[in-house]
Structure formats: C-alpha cells, structure tokens
Length: 116
Image 1 (spheres, rainbow, N blue to C red):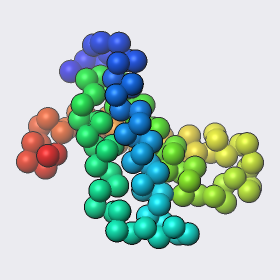
Image 2 (image 1 turned 60 degrees about the vertical axis):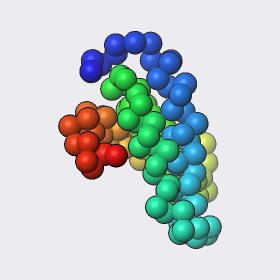
Image 3 (image 1 turned 90 degrees about the vertical axis):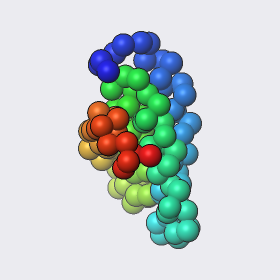
Image 4 (image 1 turned 180 degrees about the vertical axis):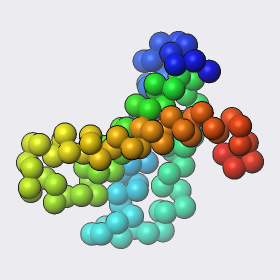
C-alpha cells in the first residue's frame, strides 16, 4: 500500500456517499433526533469505505469528510456562533478523524478478526 498508487478520484468516488451517509447517521444518534437505535450500524458505511480504499490519502479524505459532516450536523451551536466560519471550524474538528482514517486503513489488513 503506497501513499498514492492510483488516481485519487477513483477511490474517492466510491466512498464519498458512504462517508457522508455514515456522518449523517452518527449525527442522528444525538439530541434532538435521538435515533439511538441506529448506533450499531452508523459507522458501518465509513468502515467499509475505508477498507475498500487503496490509497492512504483517500482514506484520510473520506474520514475527514465523515468528521466534517458529523460536526456540521451534530454541533448546531457552531452555526449560530460562527455563521459561515463554522465551515472551517467543522474542518478543524474533523482533522483527528483523518488520522483515524489513516490508522484504520493501515492497521485493518493486519487485524482481520477485528476489522471484519
């Protein structure tokens, strides 16, 4: 697995919708929606998309997108305080999730029993 072994667009195209859907599902778990029963399946689309990526960069971008969509929906007070600056705040909140994407993509082939 290399940093960029094939076009990044091919990896991102497949996982974009899955990362967004997973971020929305995770945000729906919290108040005011309280759809807690979605908890067991909320991260599944993201984890499947991360496993299917070939490049580490695509995994980082998908996890960053997940973190951004989750923060944008789960933290509505950001929008009232920062208005359009909330977009950047959500990116800052999502940065640790990009590291998670890199770590998960790197370690998941080595831990087949835990990764599915």
